[in-house]
Length: 340
Picture 1 (tube, helix red, strand yellow):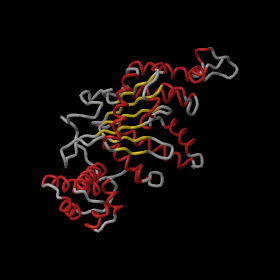
Picture 2 (cartoon, rainbow, N blue to C red):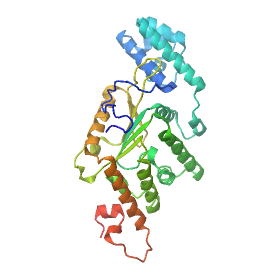
Picture 3 (cartoon, rainbow, N blue to C red):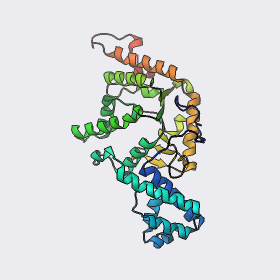
Picture 4 (tube, rainbow, N blue to C red):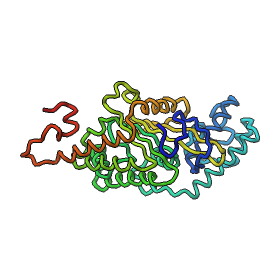
């Protein structure tokens, strides 16, 4: 599916880059710097240990540098590696610009999540930085509503389940993090494409009142010009969403230092933490999955209608206990399971 404000982008990620927004930020610059240094090292048939000896760093530090993680490295280090790898003049210029961009971004970037350092590990902080730099976020959820589309009450209910030993204060701070993340929806040059299985609408997280507000929010936010919410119905039959699991695909614009579009990153959400995939061969299955999900999902209008109808069902469920609910006012998950 192609987002409302970016109709010319290819789902396969092979955008031409015409009119693409330039992006800045240390995480993306570090990622590009690391990828290019790894490519040059491998072309020179040199090990990470040998590269580390040249600039007096451990092979582990070279590995972190090439993985785009925060690593102390100077322009002199980059120049020395370029000498050892036999880099061309063009490669040297690009790498020097990237190193400069990393240093500038580190000095000027204000990371709001630093105030939540006790709740945001470094790995998740990197994801937040990349999410803010992305031009398009595509998500697929098979159990819960996407983080960027949750209401405070819905997210509070999920956090209480995931972190039962947390104090109320810590739970509220977790909710604040997600609400701050959602500010990107109202910025410029950002598109959100969300695919949800219909079953997500039938999980009564937090109870009927919370679900009614959550689905009403989906119905409303889906009308933003840069937000697309599509439901994969029960009737879709066999499709990739039943097999691939939930994921988030981040796409980017061009880096000023290179003039090239940064390749996408996929985050595969696991109970033990998100798995970050940033190689083309790793992200391709998820880029292809978006194409298949687009094929089987309801269009935006039909999805919005289904969301609205389900929201009404949750609202009508809030009846006095001594009243018998007619069949058409049963909870969505009860009707789905055939509760008499």
